[in-house]
Length: 394
Length: 195
View 1 (cartoon, rainbow over the protein chains, first blue to last red):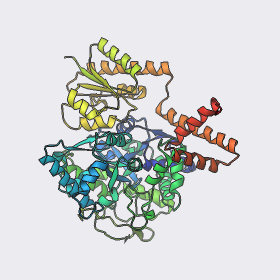
View 2: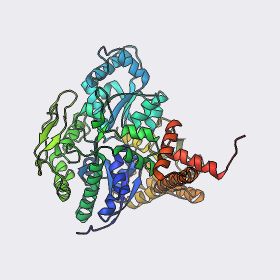
View 3: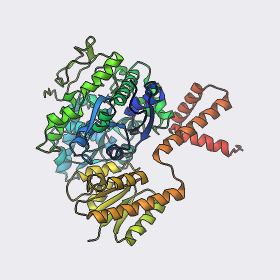
View 4: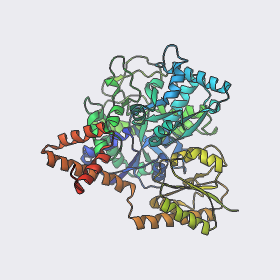
């Protein structure tokens, strides 16, 4: 059956994890579905949100919380949005200035590799600064409704830090993070790649932990559309989902990440030195024994693309924890509306991809590889623990 | 009441025109800042009633966060006067204007302010023949393609080898591929012999 419309404009930000959209376009996967797609590179999440809410885009790469925040009317104008596909897991890291890193080292007898130890070392530095009457440290993330914000807060809190009392928190656009760190206007940040690798590469920042260290299954970007758009264009939506799903699968096949980095650089999507893009595009499976890989990202394996209710619910509970969610809101109804595993299953079935038989899972319960029953045989899953060992049930 | 406006722009010739037009329309322009300054701190210090920002600046997201901090901070225009502004918001987006406004500004004043900004931005764009963001991406890609073609011709090598050459040269010189491509194209457009 033919898609209702074939000329589409999709939005993305200049980030490594826009790779599925770029690959689907450049490798002809959209075209194979009969779709002619233009990719708009937006410069901020705010302008991407505006373009989505004003109907200037058909769909977009979005932060995992954006469809929920837009539906609830927290982000811009209340506009119901949904996502039936997660684009990637992981990909973020927390980076601090070299000066702060040295101060933290002084409080970490066992080193800073363990994320709890590094958060506790930061807590000790903060306590020391408080005694000395120094200004609070300044940490940044990328957007109010971002995974980065809640991953950063989770890490801080795990070390005994109250992010609202002990730190000055703000939002800084990713391309300016390293600049501000270098200028001494920021002490640390949580951002996606390539902006952590870039700071390390230039010797102006040190990565302390990655999103997989904070949550082994940390959901990152999703593909979002307006609910109304999805209702009017169901076949187009499915065609987009299939193309993106194939792009994600391609990205997780061994040896394709460098090619993806090349597509991003050559196509003018990411104006960053190529080796920085390549470093930030690494697959967690490429980690050598004993090497740490904060910022590594997963595009397909281990049900990475499946829109788990439990993952959006975890982020929503983090919003509630920090009082960023209105008290009266009906989360169950909102999540059922914004997160659409049913649509994912249709797209995956067309491609013969095995899908989970459940919509929610217990997050954080597996500290080693495990196996999940799927529609076409068992699915190999990765550890999904939280840094503090918490187990999250809906 | 006079509306106190902060302008965030990196193009002085445009922001000067905008500032003048706003003052003539009865607005009070507090300051014009670019991305070099910590916008979060500037907004906390000046407490503007409205912020007009070039929609192409990534710093919009800093304003989004500030807008979530409380009632006294400006909110994105897409959230305001819900029923009456979709056209204006769309026009502003097309002109590359974004505005953030506190709740208590009268809708008529807000519309007038945004219209002034749209006019300034549009006439600047027409004057300078500036590219939209999408056109910029395409222009970047075209210069990379041209540089690659040039290397293939000059060195008699294939496309893959030409990319690898660009990649390793960019790596050694800590540049982006686009920066390198532009340099190569400029060098061949104005050939200079080394003495």
